[in-house]
Image (tube, rainbow, N blue to C red; front, side):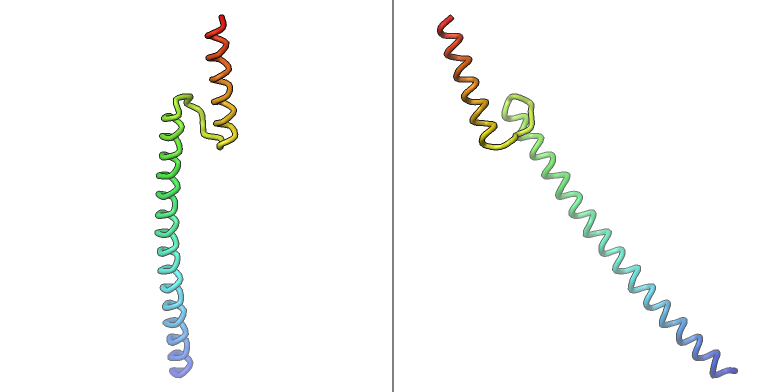
Length: 83
């Protein structure tokens, strides 16, 4: 009877150790996720700031979109000069 009790206590300690290790891993993953979320938030702020600096208040859609807007501005300037 005592032998069985000692075996069960040993198994319980092993399980508690495993649970402790898993909890530690979960905490580490939460910290990693929080760090990545902060990085994403910072990058989103930078993107919003760069969109504000473009002057049009719109999100930057890429080089072709910027070229298109530049051409449209040139056309508007030429139209303004003509009229």
